[in-house]
Each structure stands twice: as C-alpha cells, then as structure tokens.
Length: 441
Ligand SMILES: CC(C)(COP(=O)(O)OP(=O)(O)OC[C@H]1O[C@@H](n2cnc3c(N)ncnc32)[C@H](O)[C@@H]1OP(=O)(O)O)[C@@H](O)C(=O)NCCC(=O)NCCS
Image (cartoon, rainbow, N blue to C red; front, side, top):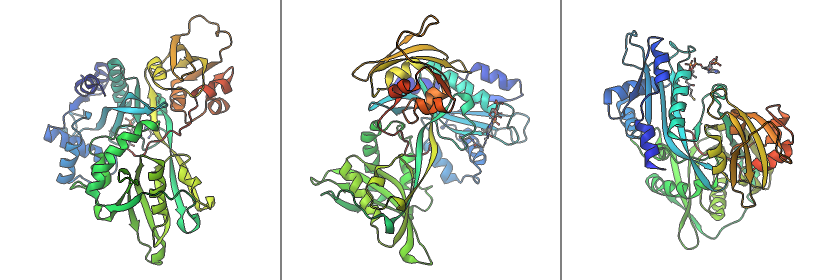
C-alpha cells in the first residue's frame, strides 16, 4: 500500500464542514492519537459502551492501544456533558488493500468502531462523521471505502452495499462422510504461537485470489490466535497445520471444542480459521475437522458461498448454510474502481450512476477487452452508443455488483437497476470466484 496514502489518511486534517456542522450542535470533532493515553482511554471506553460491552480492563486498553497505531481515530465530545472528555461518538478508519476480481488489490478506507452514544443519537452525528471522513478519503484519492456492520439497515443511505456475503455453516459430521481427496502431506498439531506465525504469511499469499478480502488489520491475528494477554479463553483453542509431501507448510486451522455434557460423543467443534494455500491443504484440513472423534456437529462462520467443502461430503443435507451480508463496499471513484478490477468476458456497457453524496455521480462507458482489462471513458451526449447496453443505477447498486457477488440481472429483476440489456451487463460484471471476507473488523 503506498505510504503517502497511509500517512496522508492517518495524519490528514479533520473535515471542516463536518466540524462546523457539529459545532452548530454545541459539539466538538477531534482526532484521537493512540499515543495520547488518557484521550485514547476515553475514546476506547466510549467504543466499548457503544457496542454494549462492559468497562474495558487496563489489559484490554493496553492491547487495544497497541493495535491502533495505524488507525485514524475520530471522536466527538460534548463540552456540556458531566464527563466531557468521554466522547459521545467514535469513528476509526485505516487504509487497507481490498481484493478485487482478477487477483488484484485496490486501496480502500476500512471503517470500524462507529458509535454514537444513546444520549446523542439520531441527530445526525454519524452522518457528519461519515460524510466528512468519506470526503477526506476521496480528496486523498482512495477510490473505495469498506466496512462490516452491526446492523444492515444503517449504511445503504451512505452508498454502501453488501458486496461479499458470508456463509455460516453447520454440519452434522456423523452424516457428512468425507468424499473429497486424501492428500499425501500430513496434518499435525501446532501451538497457538506457531499458528500466529504461520497464518499471516499464508493469508498474505492467498488473500488477493478472493475478492472481498482485505489485508488483516494490525492486532487481529493475536485476537484470533488468543496470543495476547487480553485474550478470552485462549486455552480452548487448538491449532493444526498441513505440510505438503515435501514438508512445506501450506495451510493452518484453528478450532475450539464445546463439550456436550449429555452425550460426550456429540460435542461441537467451532472452526475459527482455516487458511489454505493449495487445494490439497484445503482438503486435508477440512477432512481432519470433519473426522474429529467425539464430535457431532461442526460450525464455521464467514465461509464462502458456496464453500467447496459442500462438494466434498457424501450427504449434502448434513450441511445447513445460513447466508448473511458481510463485506460492505462503497465506490468513491468510479473510473479508478472499474479500471482496477478484471472482467470475465469482453464487451462494453454505458453506465449512468447516481449518488446522493456526489462522489460517484456521472456517466461513463466501460469497455472490456479480450484480456479482461477494462477502460473507462466519459459518456458524452444523450444517446446511448450503438450496440452498447445502458445501465442506470445508484452507487449502492454499482458497489453491490463490483466484486461480482450479485448479478446485475438480479438487481434489475429487483427493480434496483434499469437496463436496456441486463443480461449483457450482468455478463460483464460477473466473476467466477465467489466474493468473501473471512473475518470481521
Ligand atoms: C448506528 C449509530 C452509529 C447511528 O448514529 P446516529 O448518530 O444516531 O445516526 P444519525 O443520526 O447520523 O443518522 C443518520 C441516518 O441513519 C439512520 N439510522 C441511524 N441509526 C440507524 C439504525 N440503527 N438503523 C437504521 N437507520 C439508522 C437515521 O435514521 C438517519 O437516517 P436519514 O439521514 O436518512 O434520516 C448509533 O445508533 C450507534 O452507535 N449504534 C450502536 C453501535 C453500532 O451499531 N454502531 C454501528 C457499527 S457498524
């Protein structure tokens, strides 16, 4: 990721229009540094309160400060409140590479820790922070913003759309029966610390192949592996690694058991992470998990839709899949975003994009060549160029289709886009690898 983008985002000034809008309400917008211990502590306490957590302990605060050095943190304070230093609203973001179709990445602003205290909610504070921070990202030239959400009703109005889904898998392992490959390499137990060493390298090697993934934020691997002092019940986690026939580490998995006291032979295993660099590693790790002794049920969240393991078991009805929205995307710069991804089939489409916040509003023609690369030019004049399908859509719908996880034809059937030839437009935007994000941030 270019350093000037990372530091330009982290150290950039506050948005003046947002600050003014908040001043009009008697509030003050501030930047919070992770090195400002009291300021960061107040900010973190506000985040914990916003997400219905208890008061954080000192160990949790220290851990959180360590993993926040690259985050741009914004707080809103109310000078008239009795505890005026405790923000009434929080917002964090950082620059991260988003994986997009074609094994490529695009700079994005990832947003997290969004809270507004219930004493101050529904008076436009989130709107002020979001619009201001999106303006900052746009001014810096970051073409896309991303976030994961607590509620799916909040962010559509700001142009975000669920662009990568997440599957929640429950498998009755007694019924499943492994029918997939049985690779030659070996699966061995490793310590959580060794998992913590191997998993980031593997994630880095595979993440660009899956649209929707982003670089893992700082501190997340420690949280997942339970290798920090603030970890809750790390002792429940077990880790394994797969090494191929020549001894090279190709995959890791991390899981936890939950005992079934009524029937010990029907305990549950929860898969927290599975990172596989090769099809063999994928098959070997899933087979290991599905053949664990004393287990009746396996659960895994944030899996792909569809997840290949469903094609590696004899009894498809042993598996239940619940699908939810997961990686939300908001395009800020249409030409940059469309030129960065690759396309599965050649063609051209004329796009008329509306955007209530203005960033992505405009008319363009996307032309895709035989190589799958796309070029974008302005669509000038009223008429649709001869032989090119036209699509009229909002930035939310364009963002939804960007990673290829929902077809433009589906959006047309839902009345969310208007097109002279939705099937042709759908062919251009489709992608063969399901979009997926394998963690929350
Ligand atoms: C969600 C939250 C940040 C909203 O903050 P807020 O300051 O009340 O939001 P605003 O007043 O700026 O509202 C902006 C718009 O979003 C809408 N909105 C706000 N919260 C919403 C919610 N939970 N569901 C649906 N719409 C919501 C408002 O109605 C308003 O709509 P409009 O501008 O179209 O009229 C706040 O309620 C909160 O902290 N919730 C708990 C923590 C949380 O879930 N954070 C989000 C993490 S992803």
